[in-house]
Length: 130
Image (cartoon, rainbow, N blue to C red; front, side, top):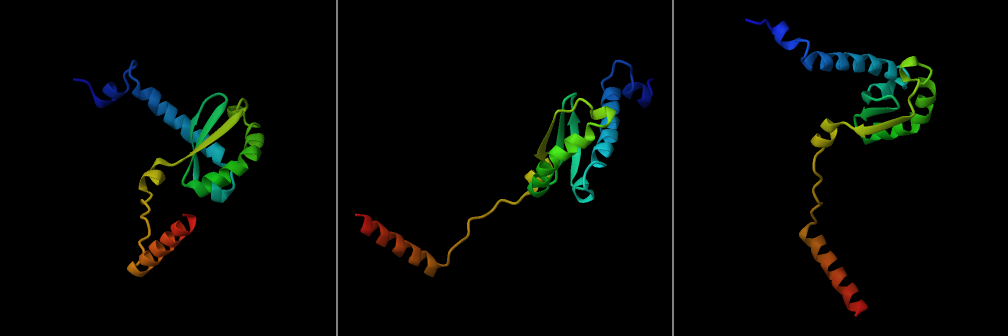
């Protein structure tokens, strides 16, 4: 019978590659966040990295906007590190958790008095047009 270690870490298995990739990304994420302002670093993290492009996930649109304005400086400074020497572009997106959990905005409801006033005003405007 095989042990869990043998099952999960078999040479031809994909799992060890995924674990190594996750560890590598975690180390690169720490390095990347060291180039960010402390407040921004708490709300952004490295999600993926190719030779020339980095994908950063921001907690929400506010932090994504702050990141966007900081990208030119980050790119200039981070290229001093050997891990990021060929980096040409930093892309960003919003966290899936944030975009999935954001509540749906309901249309505001008018009171019956205000609804009647709006309808009267619209009907007067339509009469003036005709």
